[in-house]
Structure formats: C-alpha cells, structure tokens
Image (tube, helix red, strand yellow):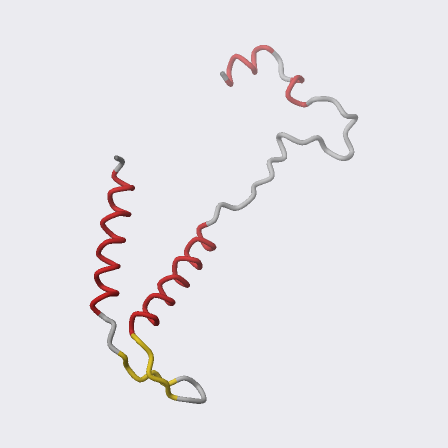
Length: 92
C-alpha cells in the first residue's frame, strides 16, 4: 500500500473513534432558537462541509494554452511546423 492510502485509513479510524466518543447532547444556540443536538452530528456535518470546501478550493483550474490553438486572425497554418530544424533540435 502507498503512504497516502495508509494515512487515509489511519485518519478515518481516528476520526471515527473521535466521533463515537462525542455522542452526548449539548445545547446549541441557533439564530432564532436553542436546540439540544448530538456533538457527533455537528462535528460530522462541519467536517463534511470542510472537506467539500477544501476539495472545491483545491480543484485544478482549466488552463487554456495559446500554443495549442490557432489564432482567429491567422491563415490557418500550423505554427508548430513553422520552426526551423535548428530550433527543433534546440528544443528537444
């Protein structure tokens, strides 16, 4: 197994034990009311929200490369083939 997989398994096990220990109800003060809610639900929901926001923030952006596309004003020639042999040798 890879280190990332082992870390995820250990983290999930520790987090599950943490949630199971904190099952007692506590009073939460919402904006318009007070309600007794299990700590397990509150911690679990906010952890899930945190993972979703973290994934959304770290999601790779779509990058458009101008080297792979032709200009709109060009004469539809392939710009990659306009390099001289000397330039191609230098690049590779």
